[in-house]
Every structure is written in structure tokens, then in C-alpha cells.
Image (tube, rainbow over the protein chains, first blue to last red):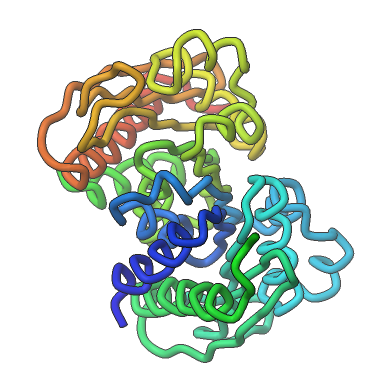
Length: 163
Length: 163
């Protein structure tokens, strides 16, 4: 699925539910947000987000515990979950999504190229998916964007509509 | 000039000077950051950034004074300057860049479609450029990305190299 199709699907459900979204991005570096803002009608649901490319900013901007970052490094399932929950809270959104992983071309902190975690945080909790992607940096980034938007849409569909 | 060419030029100068960059984006919604992270070698110079799509986040995330936002609205030269200075400080970067403007299709807060302010904040101050762009949302966004990266490159070239 193309990034923009996945973004349109997620934005459509958010508009229907009158709920808002925020993004925290490491390896995708702003591409999730940039894909979302291309969808017509997005200003009613998109709050904004954080690009936490440097590891330190995952703590200072998104509130990921420093101990977790020290122990696991930035490419980790619990770090992804903490990024999604952190940006949801700091941007005052109903839903937060996050990406962290290794775009390559070199492995990072002992983690292989293509290992990516995408996460969603909503009113009733947080969910993380581990991805093992192949291809060049651009392919890994675009696949990560599509995957996190699909995770969001799935979470929205299984979450009770707000009252 | 293409966005990626403008990004490569700016990253090249930052790498040479061993200086770092952070981004604060309103109408471009993450596209400046996403364009920058495509450039090889960028992790040495790019810290991260803020996507401040909702007006309120320009204050809470980037530190733009609430009084300024109330009086002028989000599409304003001084707001652009405050975004660039704010993200520079909050991301601990040597340089901060910012975009704010009206991508359309409708005017916003009395400001016409295509009115965009791009700003750069560095060690010796802040600079803002006003743009009057034409075309659809995508054209206005991509022109804004190129313009803010060119402003950064110009500011780097006229700034004394760090000692």
C-alpha cells in the first residue's frame, strides 16, 4: 500500500471520530507527518509532532525515560511505545504514533538494517509492531510510514468510538 | 532549485563547519526534516525538530510567546523568527530553521494563500524572508522547503566559521 493511501485511510477514520493525532519520528525523520498533512481536511485532526533524530531528543522532547534509552538504545519496542505515549501527551492529542529503527546503510548500536518498531498510543493503551524490512534507506523509510499508519488505522477500528 | 539539492547544499556546509541543525515546521508539516534526512551523512549534523501544525503547539512546543500568537496569528514574520530561535534552543542545535504560511486552498486568519515566512536562527541572530508563492498546496510546500534551506545556506555562508 502506498503511503498516501494509508494516510488517507487513517485521517478519514480520525475525522469521523472527531479525534486528533500527533507523531514522533526517528528514522522516518518527518515523513509520517509530511504524508499526513497532504490529505485534505487534515487540519481538523492533525496536531503536530516531534522529529527525534538524535537519541538525546527522544528523552528531552518526547519524555522517553533516560534509563530505558541507556539500557536498550533507541531502536527498541519499549522506546517506540514510550515515544508514541510521550508525543500523545505533549501534543495534547487523542492518538500518538511513533517510528524508530535502522534505515541503513550501516547497522546501528548492534541492530541490523531494516529492523524497525512502529507504535501507536491511544485512550486505552499502547501497541507496538516489529518490522524486518529490506531495501535501501528510502524503501525502509516509506515502508515504515505505511506500516505505522496501518497500525493506527487498525487500532482506531478496534477501539470503541468516543462518547 | 529542487528541495533535495537545496538540502544537500545546506548539509554540506554544516558538515564542513561541524555545526548542528533543528527544524520547526508549520505549513511544511515535516517536509523540511524529511528532505534533510535523505542526505547521506546527515546524522552528524541533524538533531531533529518540531512539527507545530496546530497554532497552540507553536507556543507549547516551540516557545513562541502566546501574546505574539494572539495578536498576529500564526502566519507572521516575528512568529517565524520565534519558531526558529525556539527550536534551536529546545533541540540544542547551532542553527534553527522555521516555516509558517498559508498552503491553501483557503485563506487563513485573513492571510492570502501563498504568503509564507521562512526563518533561520543562528549563533549571531535571526533572519526572516517573506515569500509570495503561487500554485497548489504541494507546490507552495515544496517551494517553502527549498526557500528555507536556501536561507540557511546563505546565513551559513555569511556567518563566521566557529572557532
